[in-house]
Structure formats: C-alpha cells, structure tokens
Image (cartoon, rainbow, N blue to C red; front, top):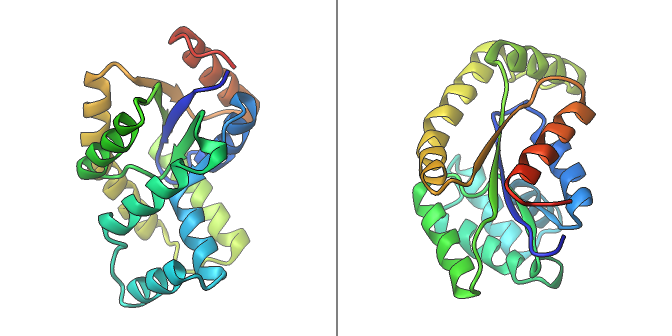
Length: 195
C-alpha cells in the first residue's frame, strides 16, 4: 500500500532495527533511521557529518534544529514521498510538533505509531549478550539499565501524545522475529493499514 507513514518506537534491544527493515520491505516504504543518517554522513565526511562529528566529540547531543532539517530533507527524497517508516525520530515533543509541521505542509499525517514493548530484564539480557559478542565493554548492566530508564522518561510524553490521537498500536516485542512481525502487521491491519 502506498502512502503508509509509520513511526516505530521501542526500548533499546527490543528489535526495532530488525523490525524496521522487515516492515519497510512489507509495506514497500523506506526505513528512515536518524542514527543511520548521522552515521553515514560522519563516515562519508559530508559537511553535515563533520558538523555532527564535532558535536559528538564534545560529548553533546545533536541539536533538534539539525536533526529536524535532516529528517525534513530525507522525507522529501523521492522514495519517501509516498510513505516511510521513521525509527529514532521524533524523540521529543518539540520534534513531534516539527514532524507535524513537515507533514501537514505536504497535506499528510502519520498513519500509525508502532510501540514495541519488551520486558526490561529480557532486554537487558539481550543487550549484555550483544555487548559481549560485539566487544562493547562500556555496555555494562548499569549503563544499559540507565539507557532504559532514559528511554522510558523521554518517550512517555510522545506515547501519551500519539495515544491521544489514537495512533498507537502496542505490540509485544518478545518472541521469534516472524511472530513479532506478524503481530505488527495484524495490529496495523486492525487500523485499516494493509501490507
């Protein structure tokens, strides 16, 4: 179906990246991850990448103005005009408002927000295992639990905002990848969004 505009929200380690790739394929829309865009620009040393690199080197967050500009630019690329799946944006109410502005300027709106939930202890276990495999020594249980609480604190207002608009579909992110995908597709079909 063309014109499907989705937002994917979920805690670190809940399988968002895996599901984003599958859903993008299922709905024939690009998966847009702000993290991937930043990393690609840094790697390719684009003017944007150099700016982001210097911000991160100072230990600061990339400012909303820059993130918003990157997303707006990406949403106007040909493959995203008829639909997209956003992962990692918006993260704040200000970014929600900015996304609303971008979409309404084109006469569009989000179709659904997919909230992937997962038991914290299971996710911590997953991330500790991933840290071990990938050699991420700084991903200790304490650090991971802190990231989880920051995620919950930051996303609660977004979830409340989108719930008030009746856009949120909540899906259990635990289980086999195919099971989770099937749950998401079924929940979206209940909202009238067909693959």
